Length: 144
Image (cartoon, rainbow, N blue to C red; front, side, top):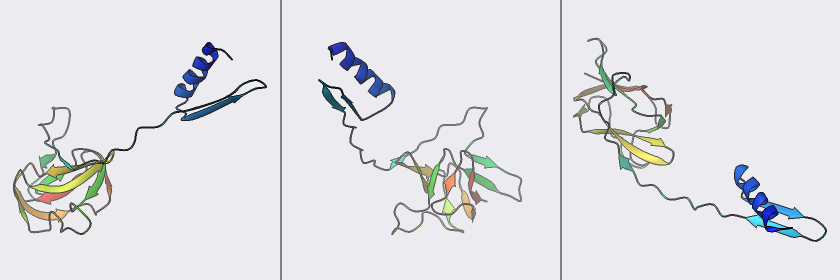
């Protein structure tokens, strides 16, 4: 086996996203192995959302008077009502929030993002349960 053939094996390994490949014939026995980068622990981050472009619906949107203000998910992720399983929930019905109040955490790709209300008001309804997967723009809370 020559260097070009070894290079060919490496290219095939990368194209197929393999971490290990072996080649054996009567004179040659080669085993190629690559280590994956270790997983990095992620620290909770606060997401500062920017005003949405006109094509998108804003995270907090005024609804008809009988519905109040709906705080919506700014991203897809797993909804958590508290910073940890032992901690008290960020919100409960009747709590007052300001535009900078952290209302929940959305986990996306192992990043824990603190979500702010972006509007002020009193919580009248919590629309999702702890651990639920939420979609972009899905209603999370209702305020008045």
